[in-house]
Image 1 (tube, rainbow, N blue to C red):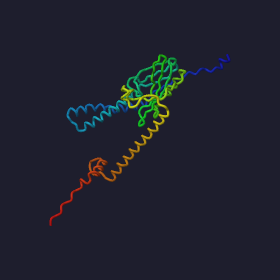
Image 2: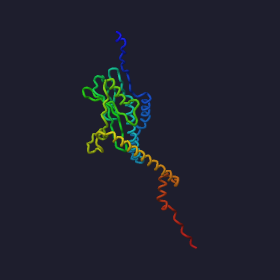
Image 3: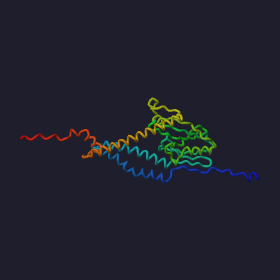
Image 4: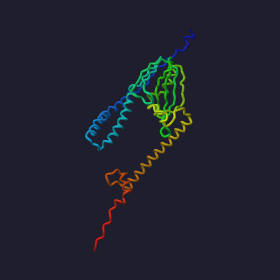
Length: 281
């Protein structure tokens, strides 16, 4: 009786919910709905111009429409991700609604799961590297491996900018603790965007996929920082050069200031007024 009285009660794990906050949902939905009327008006404008043979400014409008389409698609993905994604760590199981698409970017298809902890065989994480030395992207991915050998992807977070609403490595750690497992880190893997998203053959790939040692990752980060500083220096130099040209050659026509300066530098002698002929006595 004494041992039973002294035994501490087993503390059950608390319910933990991971989901986007109301502010995030409102912000993405508000921006998307504000831009939607302008986006919808682009196809009629383009159709009218093409049908009437109005070509002035049509090419620029096509470029604007293409860029606008990409922006609206990315916004729609973020709206869906904010509204749909949800991970609930319960007492006996984990309930999740996650993107069903492949790759680190969420898509519009979602799938719900209710996985008991005793059905989880392993919890795995790994680092995936995309790109080269100029613009490398390092992502931390996590997934669950069930006892029937099927895998459920949790998601990815960027090492440079982690998502506070969905810290997937932290979620994987908590799921492993509730399942009585250790998180297995599967190392660093170089991935190809072309191969992953478009299914291109190996001969079309710029770089091979495979294991990446920590030393190479450190060298990759150093090279990336150097390239970023070079690009910043180039942009600053161009800006200083443009300001210097505008100060040295003030614009006097309807051309952009920098173009006016260059035009004057190149064609200054050609546009000089010819000397008037001498008067006859």
